[in-house]
Length: 500
Image (spheres, helix red, strand yellow):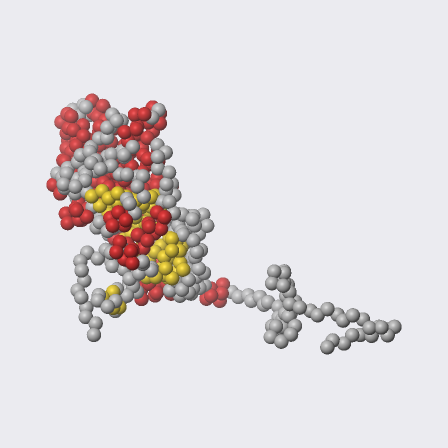
């Protein structure tokens, strides 16, 4: 019972209303020291915050931190964080301007640890977000199953299979004659520039000159390309360029400022022989004629499969990669020029080391082919094994430019690799001691895990995602049963292991 106070007149006053907890939907502001009552969390004294000062030497011991804050839960889901178990997502195009300045991604790790698997997961997710997937050179044919599952197009390059013309202006090149003259000339000059860069790169391979063309040879080659492409309604082929060089028309001699035919033969004999080699031998029937199957850029995914020439040797595969990349990028640029391709494109560039090590100037050719694509916000997934592949390039100029390929990627995905390799990466992208030790711990020289029938690499499916200067996020890729079938890349069945 509640007692009432007496008033001075002796009358009774109505009891005071009982205090009740605030309603759930009411705006509640806790008292400064907390609520009164048992177990209400009331504090008798609240201390003010403290400010600590220290020298840069002392405070530096607090950074870099051992664990990063989580990435935004947006984009393509990858899997659980190995430390916090929260879901980790990647959204390179969505983070552009916030967390990154370049949407391209560098993927590196030992063979067999899942580099291609995470690249395919990113491609699959980005296709779901409206991107078009274009694999311009599928060396091992491992993207074909995914492309077919997405309802896309697979173009198989090989003798008796499909053939592409690396000088092709793209599936929409036949529309060039319909453009106004000024716009046609601008687009044709860009296409011819790409054609010239590609032939210069192919001539630098072992099947060509083995070096970049000299100044006079380069002038002759560029002039021959323009003359062979004089008809905008038909794309020239490498044999067409050879024929122009052999015929030595007057405009070509004027361009070289030569009056003697013998002097002309001395200047061009080497590049004519090298171009002939590109149309004969191991490359015969692959890139020496018109394109048989144009790329369908309206498809959700496209793959140019080079697995049929994989046994021909690294030099043949490298030349094939350059030819397919040039053709694919030319097709995309032409489609954009006509306003037909409105979707952005994700480009998985697997086995990057093969093309870069094919000969002098390969990095320059790769950079020239992809330069405009980066400006359009398209995503390149550059996948390789080791930075030693870049350090083994033949010239110092190539090595310097190759290091810039990784440095321009704001997103790094690092799979299992030894400490020596992580030290090389740290010279270009700073890694903390804890990050290096974690990634190196996945790179055991022997397999220790058992899945019931086969040995599993201990680092398979584990990655460190490094965004800019942020602390890396360790994550495990969680594949669905369907993905396990589509992403299988082991070339041969493994030996069965009995488990007692």
